[in-house]
Image (cartoon, rainbow, N blue to C red; front, side, top):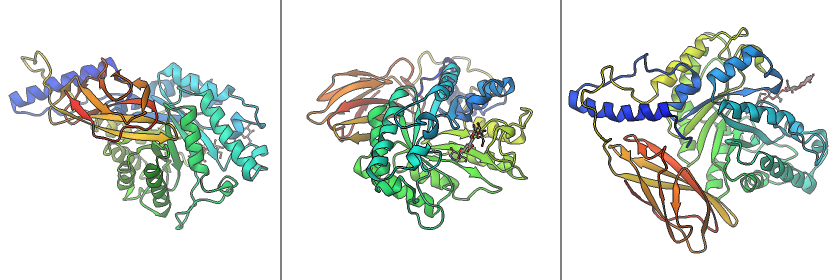
Length: 450
Ligand code: G3I
């Protein structure tokens, strides 16, 4: 989980104080406009999420574009610059100039950077299009390894495989040169990406999956199978290129993927302009906020004139003005944020935040010889102020790296305690830390002490 800003931590403390005040005063504070965040990124960050945009290196010299980008968004995705044709124009010759411009723009903004996309049947360089069989498989896996290694440690999420399922009612894989190298090409790509960049979240990304339908069910079955067999997958990207209505099962579809133990990201959102555009944008936002594992939303461009579509599908018009859809998203993000302080502060603030018990669960991404474990620390009905999680490791397992916690020991039973920025967890909230190790990951139950 991203370290929370000082203002978020302050808000969290005030939340605890507010909760105490509520009990004493017997009245509930509601979110007021004075406390609502005023940009998309800041309002999404209130619930630990990001709000991002796909950006193009060629537009970064446009001052209106860059002003909106740096003001509003806290995540960026390379619209085209990290694709196969852009990064490996001839076999074995890698060019990262434009991909690095996207990365550096994101770093300069303090934004999360999404990598898009390592393997896709479109936008392949000509040399790859003319390969097949083992030669193509080897070239594809080498591409994943090289690009993910170049960006190792800097990419928040990779779309490892893009659009590999067929449209229509089959729920089957799409035919492509990659698919013809063997059905295991997707899992081979995920394993290679994990090895090259263990810290990046690895996503499968597709379109026409914006509800429970045959295509999304095909993907659901693949993810369930990957989780059962330990293929390293962390998230599913629902592109959400939308028309004039939203599938009534949109949220239920997000939820069913989350229930498999992967994050969901809305990765390429745009909505046809028409009477319903603002409502659909709002409904998508609310659906994501309603699912804890829906961790962020990306719109596929900034202004209508930056879009790959010609039906004005974005949040800003061609002059950079905010549209009704923008307001709809911002309001939905703020409504979904944490309860804000009461309008009048409690007269006697608590001297120390209340604390209660915690619990912890682990999700594992394993490969032959290693694993990455993500541990979620949950507060109960009372806020937690400091936590310690004990993890029994199987014989032969050794920890090689820890993030968002301080570890004690590397084998046997190891313990992890909070770091400065994630010790306080609001009631019913959670935080996450992770560690990487060799051998097999933990499978037993974890103990949490607060
Ligand atoms: O940069 C060249 C330019 O030099 C040349 O003169 C011009 C002539 O056609 O082409 C320009 O490249 C275009 C590129 O966008 C940049 O504008 C490509 O032709 C064009 O094919 C490419 O389209 C991209 C498309 O993916 C490729 O399939 C869109 O920008 C991009 O938004 C779109 O993004 C995809 C996601 O990756 C996957 N999901 C669907 C989404 C929308 O199609």
